[in-house]
Length: 353
Length: 224
Ligand SMILES: Nc1ncnc2c1ncn2[C@@H]1O[C@H](COP(=O)(O)OP(=O)(O)OP(=O)(O)O)[C@@H](O)[C@H]1O
Ligand SMILES: [Mg+2]
Image 1 (cartoon, each protein chain N blue to C red):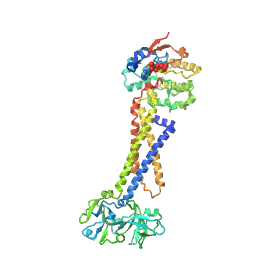
Image 2: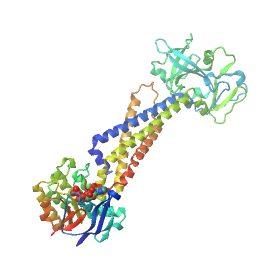
Image 3: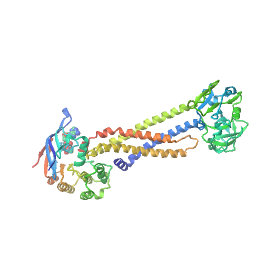
Image 4: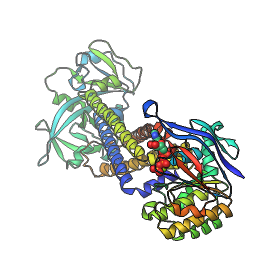
């Protein structure tokens, strides 16, 4: 530690540049991971607020809730407890006078079922009639207010915003919560329409007769359009980033250590044991990586604060923990590579130079 | 009292046609309280002698004894400890850790060797004598060649070794400083009871020596 700190103190520019490099790498890793998680959660936020465990859809809907149709006949023999709720989903374009259009997902729910009852609002109240809706906070960001009248898909009927809901997004689109009759109206033309899906909070709930099929929530989420491809893309990017940063950090630490061989020879000649030099090298790497990570975290926090709300970024504890541990391991490995050279350093080289 | 002894020491570098016999059957002894000078032309084997005497390298044949202990019998760790405790090196160049101030050079030794270093008072006196008192917070790169040399001497002495080995200690000093450092080595040998072994080209140091050896083509001849 003594040698590590003294050396950084003396060679401020050199080590400053290395910290800068590690800072930039960690910043990039944190930002990318936060965006990945943020984007993934915009796909599933609403589903998480429902605490859904099982989703029952029409088996011919290719696991797509907005494509699924459950009719009166399908639901004839279904028994539902307080842990099941009917839900109708359809994509709509919402528009209010002099405000921007918002591509959203309309979700119709029943007042006496849990999705409606458990709604968490950040403002206003729940919808009481067919002509009232609760919308995701994204609408607020876009300049919509309580009391605004929304037209859905250019309908003549207007729907008043009476509340803003927290975390009401599905498939990266903000949700408009309304009633099932409204949903039926939006999906006009299908006879005996009842809902798109049954959502259950029970892991063992099954409903498979007729056209219905039960999907576990993770299977359902993975089938959300684009969800799996998007996550895999991010995972691959972050994975590559880690591998490349491992190589960069390792190469830098290696060059740094090799440049110090003469100093090591001098210290070895003085009788300073190899273990002291190895400890100094590893602790120095950890100090550099640690400083880089702290700066990276700080910059990510600031970025997350400054970014417009429209950018989905979710800087979670999991990202902080796994990114930090990953980078520290990277630094450790990087600093352990030149250790062989330190052990083999020839103190006789210190003389006759 | 004999503190270091080399018996029939040989050192061969390289193999086959590239083989160099840097040391041929060296026999050497130095006692506490004396200054020993090793002189000779370039390539004679002086530095090789110093590295082997200081246990930085092993001889190809023969024995090195420090306080009657065979160095060849020691483990690597014990050899480190031997160098740390009993041997002080003053090297010709780059002999200080570049990123430590003069004061921190002592601190490094103290961190590894916790006991039997010079006490504060003795260190201050030594620094005074070497004209380093005002330079303790400077880095080696901020010192002149002569100041670096003296700082290296102070560092070597701080660990309070029995044997002080120096390679060309006066190479970067002017005449006035040579006299001073020569006298200093003599005082160290006498007052602190150390064996001081100096490798040098510098005939100005001869008058401070108790023994003088000349090296030539790997052989050592005692002068006088
Ligand atoms: N590591 C080495 N490998 C091969 N040959 C070496 C090595 N070190 C020294 N030699 C050879 O051994 C001989 C003695 O070298 P040494 O460095 O001991 O001479 P020196 O007396 O210290 O010379 P100088 O006064 O120039 O410092 C030389 O011929 C040199 O080329
Ligand atoms: Mg030499």
